[in-house]
Image (cartoon, rainbow, N blue to C red; front, side, top):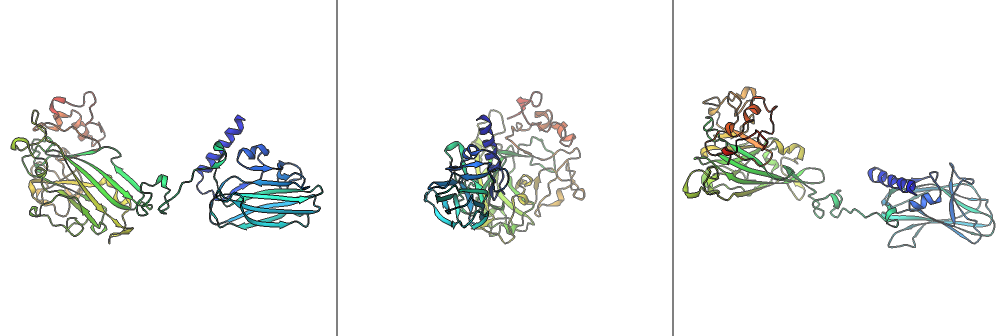
Length: 474
């Protein structure tokens, strides 16, 4: 029995893993009657027999049809609404009056609907093909009957247009259905929006929690290089449809700290997205007096790629305690609660994309989004991550002066001659340095990471032994 159960389990797993399996085929050559009954065949007044098989080594053969009825019922099978039920049959040792009826059975109709009715006139093997239009979970029943004599009915090479749907571990009941309520092609169990035909999946970046952006705002000067002038946590939820095209993108930005004396804004660009692919943007925080020009879809105008200004001035949302200039960067200073800004971008409206066309999640490539601050509230003074291109609104006069060693001809941006960046993107929450404490003295492996172009100590920001000077971190 242990071997039989193992065989059944392997059989079920094979069927579950084979998504293209469109015909359930049985030739009855794999075992005895008990083997097939364990696989949810119901065989009454019949058996899997080696005596005079129609084909192969075995066929199902009924008892003598002398006023007895031989019945063979298949397991539950999930039908797709098309295809043919095929099988071979005959009367062995033909004599008298013999008949075969075939029924399709559902849970709602256990008596079945008659599909095929055949009176035998000889013992010749017959091959049948019956069109099946039903969709759902069904069984098929073969009913051999007759009277007098020694004739027996035989059945072989059964092929049903569907996938096995019985559960041997649960009294052979149908395997729990996996409906697709909204009809978008994604089963409800896999669909984050089972009643919304236009949405199917939630995609998160980072996978959990928040990542951190940290900026030094005195570019092109290195300044005090504490990289705490704008500290923003962020995460994205990207909603896609069944075709993996973006429907909505929700960005959540947590304003954590600013050690700056300057007023700085913040935005980001989607480098692969045409602005006209975005239908609308909501939730951004920009005063009309701040000087930004937005289109009807909420994006900044005059940009080659979709560009969102999230907020115009950090200090409008997280106000320094006691009227000072810094917030959440000085030891002993009263902490100020964070503020959160949520920006929602719509890429589709009831399944219709923006004028620029649908944007796949692969094209969006959110891990390569291009965040930046606008220092001093001067629109042209953009500060980006190292080697990320400025937007069309950036003022190039700042490249290559003071400590900046940007060289657009070789795609080098926002780095010093020693490759120090003015901004960091950390995939997790980042414990930033105290005010006026250089990140190089707070994080002891940071310099090695920079000089090796990221090859050494890629986790320099983590709290590992020998990695940080805790007295210099907020």
